[in-house]
Image (cartoon, rainbow, N blue to C red; front, side):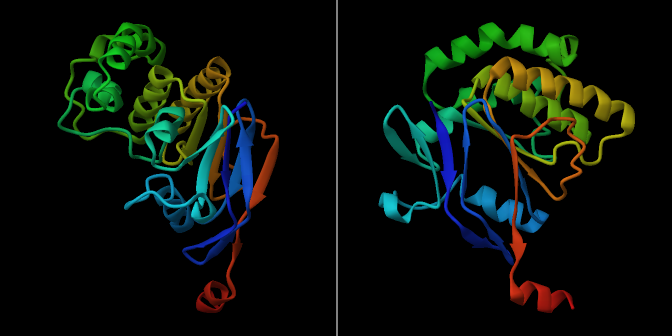
Length: 221
């Protein structure tokens, strides 16, 4: 069993409760958008490796623990972030394969390329893989990020209010693709949302909420 854990921490004016998400479990974490971005920075920390007692976020797998940002963590944890899936000057194909193009593992790249056509067809972009991405909608950002997860097959997925900004007809389509992909992957899902009414259409095993710090509440008064 694989589990992603985090300590209680204060992030951008909100206190996040400690928690975990297990492989196959779906957990929602409600907090302001500014705190979401601060939390995501914990997934990709800069600097040297820290002693385990100083980790804010880590992965427990195969009787071992891995710090956020480590190679072991990155290979097991995928992300689907709000309006951050597409790089404009790359093709859609290159965008889907981006996590595999520069990690130095030719075997992983070959496996991803072998699955690419099937994933692209599932997403409805099979005939457009060689188009330059350009400026794309929230929907396209979402499905490209979702496609990367289907190629990577992470054990834990972190998603961030991906549905926001999608028109109703696109939202319905994305919800269906997202739910089907999560069922197929069987991954744990940590969904970062600004509201308990998140519009995902998913059922969550538990829902945690950050609380505003006293200083943040005073600033808003």
